[in-house]
Amino acid sequence: MSKPIEEWRKKKGEVRKQNKQFLKRLGRKKGKQLDALAENVHDEVFSEVDCLQCANCCTSIPPIVNQTDAKRIAKHLGMKLSKFQDEYLTIDEDGDMVMRTTPCVFLQEDNYCLIYEYRPKACREYPHTNNLEFSKHLKLHEKNARYCPGVFHILERLKKLELG
Ligand code: SF4
Ligand code: SF4
Image (cartoon, rainbow, N blue to C red; front, side):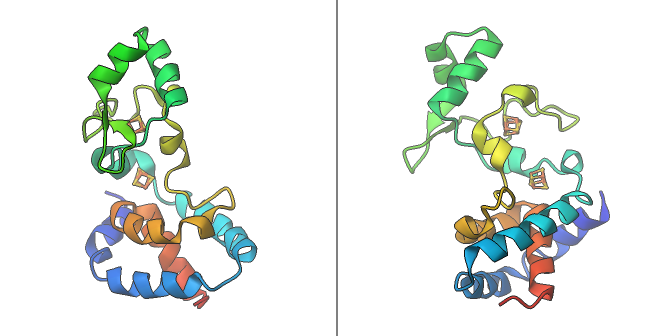
C-alpha cells in the first residue's frame, strides 16, 4: 500500500470533526478563488495517490447511473437497456438509479474498471475536487474524505494553507 493511502487509513477517523469545521469555514470563502486553488491541489495530490492501488470508491459507493450512462453501457455490453437495468441497477433511498452491487460488478481484481471507457458520468467526475467545482460540493468532501484518500489529502493540504 502506498504511503498516502496508508496515512489516510490511519488518520481518516481522527480528522472528521476538524474537517467538518474546516469545510464550514471554507463555505464562507469566495468560490472561484477556492476552486482554482483546489484544482492545483487536486493535481498535486492525484500525482501521488494511485487510484489503481485504492479503488475504494468502486468498492464502497454505488455510483449513480443516469439514463444516458445506462444506454451507453448496455450498448457496449450488447444488452437490451431493460435487461441491463434489471440485472445491474437498482433505485437507492434518494430515488437515484445506481449500480446494484458494491463492490461494483465491473471492478476487476487488478482494480481496473471493465467498462472504463463507458463508465457512468458519476465515476468520471468522482471525487468532484477538480473541474473548478470544488466549492459546489463542500458537504460531499466531508463525507468523501472518509472514503477517498485523494479527498483526505486535498483537505489536509488546504488546511495547511490556513484558508479557514
Ligand atoms: S463502473 Fe467502473 S469506475 Fe464506476 S464504480 Fe464500477 S468499476 Fe468503478
Ligand atoms: S477512492 Fe479516491 S483515491 Fe481511491 S480510487 Fe476512488 S478516486 Fe481514487
